[in-house]
Image (cartoon, rainbow, N blue to C red; front, side):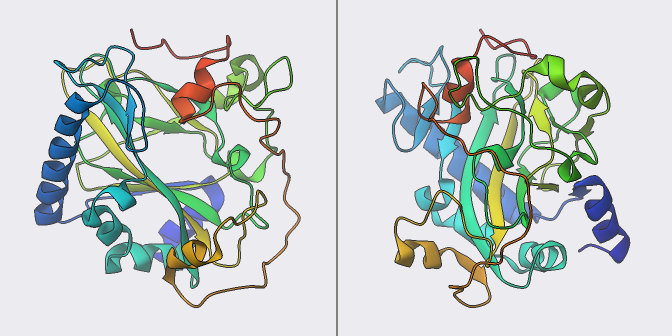
Length: 289
C-alpha cells in the first residue's frame, strides 16, 4: 500500500495520506453502522460511555461530535484496524510489533461540527518511546471546506509544547500565540472517502469547524509499537494485551530519550478532548455554536 518513498516522507514530515485504503464495500458498511449509532443518541441527553454530544444536541435532533472507543461499540471498527492493508502500512512505519492504544470517531456535521484546537497527541499519552501514530480514516470526501485535519510537517521531531493552562492544569491545547509560524505551515489531510492519514504522535495538528453543507466524519485509531508502554501505567494487563494487532506480548518496554510533559494535574473538565479544551480561554478556531 505504501512505497519506501512514502516511508521516508513519514520519517521527514511526520504525516502521510494514503489514498482509498478502505474498499467501497467496507466503507458502505461502516457508514451504515455510524448512522445507526448516531440515531441511538436520541435516547440520551448527556455524554456517556459511547457518545460525546454537541452543545446543541437534543433528543429530537441528535447531534454527536464523537463516538468513543468505537472498536468496543461495533466489531467493524476492530475489523478495520486489524485488516491486512492497514497492518501492512503500520508494519512499514512502526512495526512489526503493534498495539492499539485507543480509538474514536470524530464527527463534524454540516455547518456546525466542532473544531479541535492545536495540540500534540503525545501530550495526552506519552510512552516509553515515540513509535506511536494515529490513523485518520476518512469516512467522507474531505476538502478545505469541511474541516480537514491540519498537520504541521516536521514538528514531530521538535519540542513538546506546553498543554497546560495558567493555573497549571492540563488543558489539552497549546496557546496559539506560541505556534504562529507552525500554524502558518500546516497542511490539510484531504482525500476521497476511504483514504487514510498517518501522523506521528508528536506532530502538531488541529482542525476547524465544518463550514460546508457536507459532513466530515473521521475515524481515528492510536497505534503504538508493542514495546512502547504508556507512562501513565497499565491498569489491566489482560485488556492491554488484547489490543495487540501484530507480534507477541511484550513485557520489556523499549526506553528512548524523548521529551515528555505529563498530563498532570488532570484537566478541570474530564472527558473527551472537546471537554478538556473547552475549559481554556485561549482558542485559535471559531468554536461551533
